[in-house]
Amino acid sequence: MMIELTINGERKRLDVNPGEKLLDVLRREGYMGVKTGCGSGDCGACAVLFNGRAVNSCLLLAGKADGADIVTVEGLGGGDALHPIQEAFAAEGAVQCGYCTPGMIIAAYDLLSRNPNPTEEEIRIGLSGNLCRCTGYVKQIAAVKRAASAMANEGGDGND
Amino acid sequence: MTSTAIEQYVRPASVEEAWAVLVERGAAARPIGGGIDIGLHPTSGLSTLIDLDRLALSYLRDEDGLAIGAGTTFTEILESPHTEKYANGILGEVLQKVASPLQRNLATIGGTLGSAHPWSDVVPALLVLDARLRVYDGQSREISLVEYLTARATGDRPLIIEIRLPVKSRASAGAFEKYSSTGFDVATLNCACYAAIDAGRCQTIRIAVGGTPSLATRCLTAEQSPIGARLDDQMIETVAGVVAEGIDARDDRRASAAYRRHLAGVGVSRCLKQIVGRLETMT
Image (tube, rainbow over all chains, first blue to last red; front, top):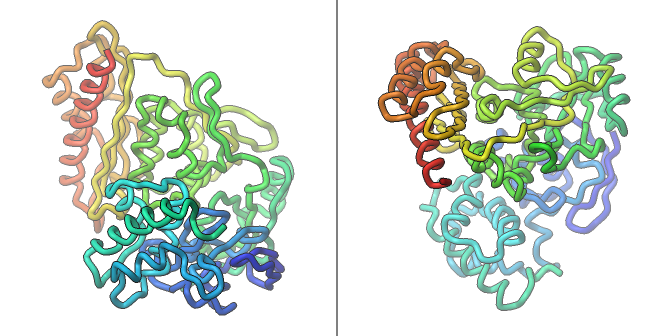
C-alpha cells in the first residue's frame, strides 16, 4: 500500500504494509532518533508526534499514518538548531545512555504545547509513558521545567 | 517485533460502507479505532482492516446526557470540559488510570469497547453509568452496553458509532478503584460504583467489578440491600461483603481468587465511601 504523509515537514510517499508499525517504517527510512524499545507501548522510546500528539510509533499502524503529519525528534529543532526542550535536556544533564531521551522529548513537547506552565505533578504524568532505566526521573523533570521557562521567555515554542 | 500482514486497508467514508466491507469479508476483516490491538495481538486469518477514522466520530456533545463519538481518543475525553461535569468526572478519573498519555492519545473509546479486554477499566465505569451504545449492523439502533457485551460474546459484533451516557440526577456521584502490580500494568482487579442519594436515602446504586480476571459485570445482588437505606459505614461493609462473595473470582498469574475477593471488598467499600463523601461536599 502506498501512503502519503509528512515527516518533519517533508512530504513523503512510501510503500508499506498497512499492518506494520510506523516505528519500523521510520527507522527503515533513516529516522534513527526513533528508538525501538519494548515494541508493546510500555517504554515510550519510539514516541513521535502523530498529528500533533505524542504516540507510541510501535503501536501505530503504518496504514493509519496515511495522510498524517509525523514529527520525530529530528524534526523538532530547525536544521542544526536544537529545540528549547532539547537544549534543556542537555543543560540539565537529563541523559545517561540516552536511549529514552528522544521519546521523553517528544512527550515533553506534547505536554508543553498544551500546558506551557505545568506543575511537577503534571510533568510526571506527562512523562509517565516514558521509561528510563538509568536515571531516577529527576533531571528530566528539571529539564521540562527549564524548557517551559525558556519557551515562556521567548514567547513561543521555537519551532514556528 | 511481530506485525500482521494486511492485504487490504480501507477507510470507508460512511458507516454503511464500513458495514458492507465487514459483511463481505467476515472474520478476515476487523474495524479499528486507534488500531493498538492489531499491533499488540497479531491475529491469524486477519487480512482486512477497516479504519473508521474518516467517519467523523471524534466528538463529545452535552446533549440529553453525554454523547461520545466512538472515534474519540481517551485524551480527547480527558481534555473535554464536558467530562468533568458528568457524574463528578468519574470517566476522567478512570481514563487517567489507563495506560500512559502516549497510548491515551491513540486509544479510542469505541475501540476499547470493541476489544472488551477482561481487564478493561472503561467497561466497569460505563456499566455503572448505564451507558448505551448507538450501533450499526445494517440498521442504526441503540442498545445498552450490557446488550452489546452479551451479543459480542456470541460473535455478534455491530459497529459501535456512539456511546451515550444518560442524564444523571444532581445528587449522584461515581467512584473508581483500580489495583495493579505497577501503575502501568492492567488491572489485577478494578471496580466502579455509582449512587444517587435523596434525603439521606440511597435511590440508585450500581456496582461493577472487572478483571476478576473476567470482564466486568454488574453486582446485581449486592445492589439490592442499600436501596431506600442510608449508605452508612455498616451498610457499605455489608454491600462490600456481598460483592466479594459474589464475584466470579479465579486464579491467574496476576492474583489468586482469594486475593481478588479481598480486593473487590476493599475496592467497593472505598468507592462507596468516596461517593458518600463527594455527595456530602455537593450539598
